[in-house]
Each structure stands twice: as structure tokens, then as C-alpha cells.
Length: 244
Image 1 (cartoon, rainbow, N blue to C red):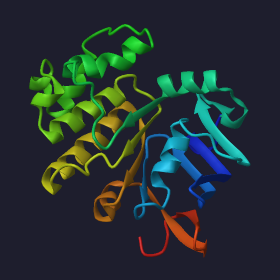
Image 2: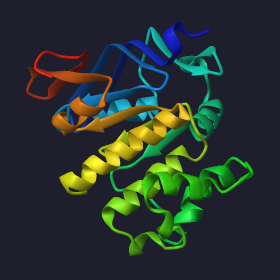
Image 3: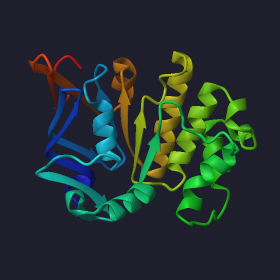
Image 4: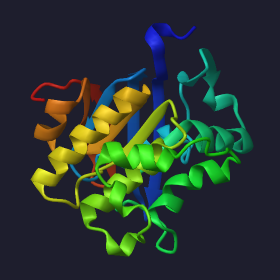
């Protein structure tokens, strides 16, 4: 069994990116996500929040790590040892993703967008999963509409429903309320966390809104950004950093 119900466990992880002679280095001394909790990643633009989210989403491979593992039905899987094919299968079935813009396909209805992960994984919809999720998220009347006919908040709720459709162990969300007003953002946060809790899904949320995440998150990580040189930035992940 995994320690304390951990979904993710990272230690000594590094990722370096270079563009036009400018070097950015992300360092993760230690990071974990436990079953059913909401973990916030907070920091300024360019600190590596989205880079870390892409690593957790198995879209970006780290340069190295002492530990980079994911729970799979109670067994610890070393993600550094897997090839691209197996990582893609894990990404499709065990990780949900909510983009800042929602990322809904404009030619599909809300219902079809939500059920897309089931179709991709060749799972049957035994019961109306889309109706159940949208009812909890307050957009059940929008199921047969295309995304372009929804408000920004409704599109984000539909994207959340799609990420939860397979009931993955973890959902990653990149600034999920950045494009909506504060009142709508608060409601989306509340419904997102309530529904995830009902389903036993862990959430990792990237946000610049410290006040919002402080109220909702079980734990918060921040970043210490340093400049060893004019073209070199080092960002280090810190658990519950001072000031947060």
C-alpha cells in the first residue's frame, strides 16, 4: 500500500528548459498529493507552476528525480521507468485536466464533450454520467448546447465535468477560474471541491489567487525564484512557504 494514501510522490526532481540562451530550472525537493485532498500551487508568472503541472500530467518528462511515482490501485508505480506508451495510457485513464480556457471542442455539445474521455477509453456510459455531473455543477440545462453558446463560467463547469467523467484519482487544474468574475469563481471552486470530494478525487490547482486557494486548499506550495545570472532563473518548490 502507498504511504498515507499518497497519489503522487516526488523528491529531488529537476527540469531545465532553455530558449534563446535563457535557462529556466525547476527544482522540486519534495512534493506529494494525498487521496481526496486539494493542493494549491501558487506563484507569480514564470515561476514554473504550469511546468510542474505538465510534469504531473505526464506531458513533460523531468530531467531526473530520486522519486516520481503515482499510486495505481494501491501499488506504487515508478513513472521514471515507463515508456511513452504506458505514460500515455496512465494519462488517459488516471489523470483529469482542466485548462484555463476550458478546452472544450466547439463542434461537440456539452454532453458529448463530457463523455469524450469515456469514448476515447472505450468505456460505456452505464447511466447518465453527464447528467449527474452537470446537475452537481449547476449546468444540467446546458447539456445539448455547443460551448460557444455558454458563458465563461458554464464552459469551465463543463470542463470540470469532463475531467471528472472517468472518476480519475487526480484532476489537475490550470487557473480554472482566471477567466470569470470573483463571485462566479467562488461558486465554481465550491462546487468543484464538493463534487471532487464526493467522488474521492484529489485536486492539484495552479492559481495566482492566494486568497481563494487559502480558503479552499488542504495544503499550499509556493516557489522561491532566484537569478544566479542574467540569463539563468532557478525556481524551487516550497511547502507552505512563509507568507502564505
